[in-house]
Length: 206
Image: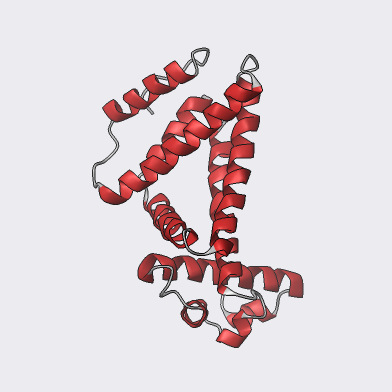
């Protein structure tokens, strides 16, 4: 949608779409140039705005990055929810962790850029901490629904294990060009069978 079409929309919807444009532009800039080189001026150009217009929607680069991480978190949760009707919980988690699609690859690049920045920027560290808490809350809710016999301590332990495994996979994916194979998936399923012994972890091919 171009700027002329945007101006015809109600203000609230127009502002929402412009924020989406800015977030998508920030995503492209971080992927192409890295976190530090992705300036607000660069993001504004990518979105088709002046830098002054950009500041009407976001007060700072950190605010844009916060919206970017929030968008990625929402997409991840939507993928998991959408798959819940057709796959068991363990398989959903495994497929999410081992997805090698281009969109997931881009999300991993952004996450690693943000993670590096978080070591020296408290604002970015807080953004990632908030997103982590949101994902963990969803994982805990799903685990409690699937495994009523697990204690609270066990549920939180499993959620933390899944997060650790997923983040490790993100780092490995950035260093290795190996593709996910059925044998690889089978190993992951066996690990989850041990972790969640009451779960009938699917061995079927997708």
